[in-house]
Length: 522
Image (spheres, rainbow, N blue to C red):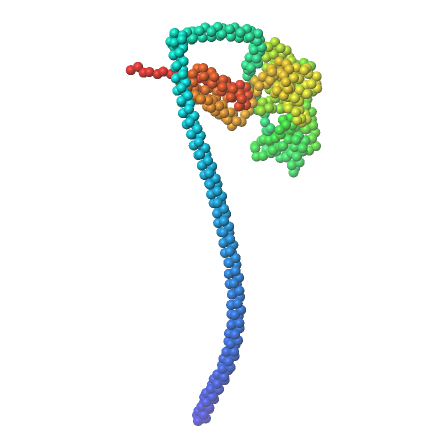
């Protein structure tokens, strides 16, 4: 049994060895085949890679050429722009050189002209000096000859001449004084009237400044929503009915009404007050209330006109003119209420006419109506003075009153004494302190201009504009300006102010000259 197993084992081992050998041989042949295939594939891949590399190389070369061309064009553009800039700079330099050359030529010509003028001046100066010396010699020779002829010395002759001139001057002065007294007696009344017209001043009460904005106060901010309405219907209806811009902003318990027409602004304010008080705010109600308010304001205008006429004692005024006078309440001029201004002018005219012995009622009438052209119901291209005169003529006013209205700004010729009275009273009412609103900058500039005019004269040391520009105090150097020149300087400054500046009222110019002699006792 053991003898059989051993050959079997040996046979198995021999078979395994043989099989392994056969397997290795098969693997080797298979690997050789695979190697050949791999080599072929590698050769194929290498060939394709070379082809791809050649194509990539060509593409890169093309891209490089395109990039080079692009860079070259950009470089050429840069070079062209630089050349253009350089050419522009060269052109500017050439222009400047030409300008400089022309300026140099001009300066040369001016220098030559100046040198020539200087030579002429020196020649003339020498000539004048020679003439002056010759005149002095001739004068001395003439004086000597006169002394020999008259038998008097120069000092004695001067004394006799001065005494004779004194007597002659006294006689002429007395004659002149006598003539002036006689002329003043003849014109005393007329001069007195002019003085009254130029000097009467009245100070009225302080008036509130009108503007184009009114503030409507509310009890609470809840009312703002009701006034605005759903989708803004109520506020649009209010603006359409009144013609007033209604501004609802963050201001607590207040609404702003903006409009240049004070009558429409007042109608809007009263209508809004009625609506808020009633509580029923809708478009139909708004239109109804606005119409009622317009009728109320119209009636109030008439009542204001009637009260004004009655207060001033004016009778027989046409109803349309009374209505126009009432409309003045809602009109302002330079911040001054027109009705208050007209009442003030009317009173001043009455006082001035009474002082001058004229008809004070007609003067009051003209003073009240002088600015009715500022409240037209329809637009007109005429100045307010001429428009007011046409209205006065239309409604049967007297010729003196119509002329005073039309001539108070010199649009037409003054034909009666009422005309200058109205003009002066209008200026007085507008020129009094606090009557009219002025911008602070323009006010300061007017004061500076007054002082600059004073400094333009020789000898002025200091100048102060005081009394809101109605007086100018000028301090002069006593060594340069004497008493006679001080009076002349005051007159010249006042004339220059009158000719060069625009100002209300009048400006008083006071020239102060002071001489001080100071010593100290030790």
